[in-house]
Length: 499
Image (cartoon, rainbow, N blue to C red; front, side):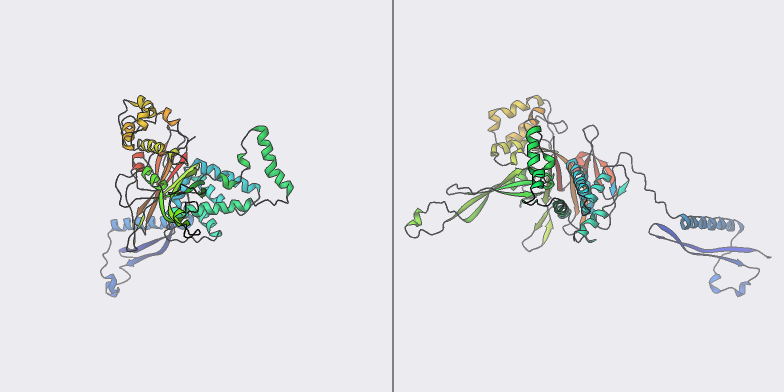
């Protein structure tokens, strides 16, 4: 070829599709001025500027580099090796399309050791029964194991698949994390109940093996046969509420009714007085409620006896709710949806202060109001700092009769001036409590009442030396101080009983 040749690269078009680089169009045109006269060139080429030798050189290099990159992606594809996780971080969870509600619950459960160990025993029990219908229990355990392991990330796809096998409709729309929590607990219970059918009274051999022999062994070894109990009774989040009714006229008490729960829902009072704590919501939960026009068969009928002995007398009853049995892992749901008079709903963004160590002794059945006042004061000491100079006097101050007679405000002042926020509670006080719970995870809802995003703060570590708090939002994970956790607008709180 004679004459000067000019290389014109019209363009390299590359499209990314599902992580793979696809070369869709590559056009390279050589325009030879010596072959094609300028007058015969197409009009659209009239605006092209001929390249110099240096420009031609760099255009050749650019074209070769583009071809090399495109060829490597076509031949080998993108790297499937997961990104290296940050040092001392925890795994994240992939968002499968508005699945943050599932990711938040999985991260919270992963921080509860009692829940993880129970899931492990449940899977072992299912394997012993050679069951193939325990998909949900096994899928949850797999996710929890990954979240407590060294993997970079995982997803809850198998959990959603297992729920759909139980005819739960899990769409790609936004869902509520608290509702999902109850879907998980109820479905897990269904799976385990299917593994533990009721034994017929006619099956004497099985009855002797499952019921009589464990009792005999207990008497011999004096070891509680916890492993012989049905799994549903050992569910770490299962507790009992006591519901009592008492007539205000004759003090007659109806027999107490027991109701099981996997979580408790606390409501924010309206109007909000401000500076609310978790203790305030718990007191509201167990406070007496007056019920009008209740029929009492034991009330005296002197006024109506002369007229009609069959006349029914209606009086006012007091309804009292308390905790009959507290679970190993206590899940508290703070209701933040408020219904207006016009029928519309809105989200309540009020801050509810919650302690790192929760004392539940004072909300248990048959506890006095005096003890609840003492518990209120202790619950507040983890939320506000104070002077630590007089920390040795805390036990004497609390045990004195004068202190027990003071109102709740004086209790708070006494405790908060003695123990600081950063120091652990006094051991003498801690030993006097039976139901102490340590905060393990906080689920937070970001957004409005109809749309938003769920995140989780979770505690990681087995002791104070290596304990850390992490912020988890799907795949995003970062270490945070507890001050950020305590300042969050909690939607769900996960507490675990301290040994």
